[in-house]
Image 1 (cartoon, rainbow, N blue to C red):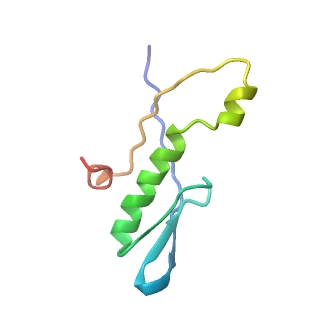
Image 2 (image 1 turned 45 degrees about the horizontal axis):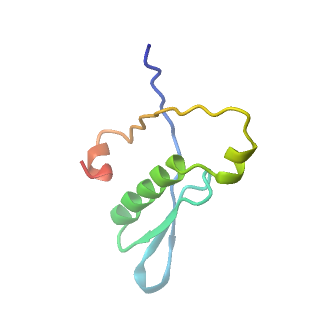
Length: 87
């Protein structure tokens, strides 16, 4: 089986929240929203939210399917990926 590298470029939107916190969202993927005290913390947490959104099946869509296929996708977040992915 050959590997098929996948590179995604997603926009992270930051907004000022209460008490100096920042919210971070990925507008292209509803459900990826979090908040952090700093931009780095918010970025780290929204990438965690991205991983959760991509790994959680939506039951109503799965129930409607005639067939299912599970795939594993490796996402790279640039040179500092290990910093944001906790490695």
